[in-house]
Length: 422
Image (cartoon, rainbow, N blue to C red; front, side):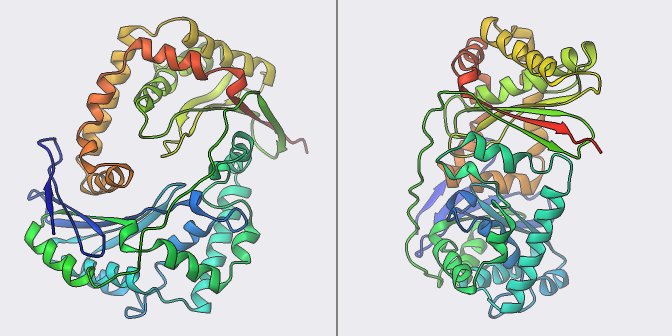
C-alpha cells in the first residue's frame, strides 16, 4: 500500500489505494466532532445506453433500498446519529454520510455493504422506479420551464451523450427498466476501481486505513469499465427551437459549446459568466433588467461538466417586450465582450467574489470531501489546492479571446418559450 501526501496547499490530505483499486483520501480536521465518508462513483448519465436513459439517477435511489446484509440502510445510521444523501450528474454519482466521529465505523459498514452486494428485489425496483417517474413529472414536465434542458440538450448536442438530462430522455426508459438491466448496470459501474472514497473530519489516517482494509478491501469486482464516448463535432450553424407552454412569461435560452472542466480556459469561462450575471452590478442585471427593463430576470451560467460543455445566457421577458427585442439585446451584450476588453476593475470585482465564495465553501467539511473526490476522479485531488491560482491567472484578454472564438451565432442553440394563450 502506497501513501501519497498532499502538497502544502490549503486542504491537507493523504491518499492511498487498496489492493482492489479503491482510492482512499483522508482529510483530517480536528476542529470538528464530526466525520464524513464520501464515495464518488465514476458514472453519470453520459455512461447510459441512449435507449435506457435515467439509469444513473435511478441507481441513486436504488442504493437506499437496502443491501443483502443490511436490509434497512437508514435505521442503523439514525442510531449512530448520522445523516446521508446523494446526488447524480451527467458525470458522477455521489453518496455521503456525516456522523459523530466516534461512530465512523458505522459509515464504513453501511457503504461497503452497498458496494459489495445491493439487494435487488422486485418491490424495491418498483418503488424506486415510481419515485423517479414521479420526480420526472413533477420537476421536469409540470413545472414552468421545467423541460428547458430536456429541450436544449438534444438541440445543442447531436452525438455526445450530454444530449440527455440526468433524469433521462423520457419516462418510459425508467418505466420499462428490467431487473436484469438494473443488475448489469450495477455490476459494471459500482466497483472499487470505479470509485474514490474520501474520509474527512476528526479522523486519524491509521484508523481509516484499518477500517478501509477491513470493510472495503475484500470487495473485488473486476476492472474499471472503459469509457469510449462519441465526440461532439464542431457546431457550424445556428440551431433553434420554439415551443409554447403554459408559462407565466416568455423566455429565451441561448447556449454555446465551451470547454470541459479540465481545460485551461475553464476558469476564463467561469469569470466571463460572472461578468455577465454575477450579482446586482453585473452587465445583464444592470443593463437588461434594471435600465432597459427588457427582462424581469437574466442569468449566465456554465453546466460545469467534465467533457466539453455548455455556456448559457437565459432570461424571462418583461410582458411588454418581444422575443426579437430580447434576443437582440442579448446579442448586443455578447458582441461587446467580443469587441471591447472587460475593464480591469470589472474583472477584479468578479475575482474578489470568486475568492470569497471559494473561502466560504471550503469552510464546510462536506464540501471539502466532495471537492477532493471530484478532483481525484478527473485528474488529481491536489488540483483543489490550485484552483484559485488558475482564476487569478485569467486576463481581460483571455475573456475577449474566448468570446471572439465561441460567442458566435454558428455556435449557438436558441430555445424560445412562448406563453400559451388560454
